[in-house]
Image (cartoon, rainbow, N blue to C red; front, side, top):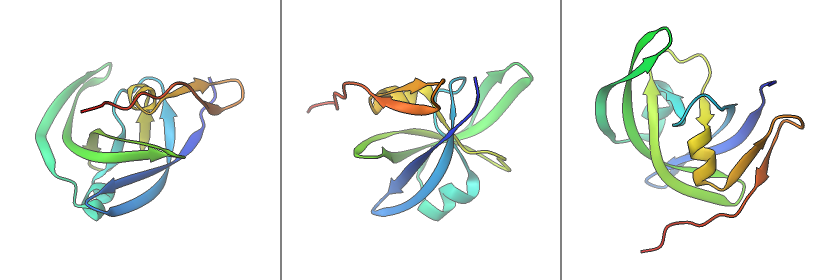
Length: 118
């Protein structure tokens, strides 16, 4: 599958940054750089969480952020990685926002979106 990026807004506490995140079907959480997290002053919920990767373990800080694509937004966990070369949005995050991936046309497709109710 060829790669593509999607314009994504990341927010916390009324402060937002817009990024072009790489759509990564192998990732669950959005993974952002420490620099982006610091700009938003994201609250670190878990420090040094270890993900098992094919190449070994990867330590990631976990924070909360609001993620928005087009007219859909949702609060979710994001991974923060030092010296990250490419920020990504994972498939689970896209599902939470009600999107499917069209790898042929390199775009997202809106599906039904059911935000949680309280």
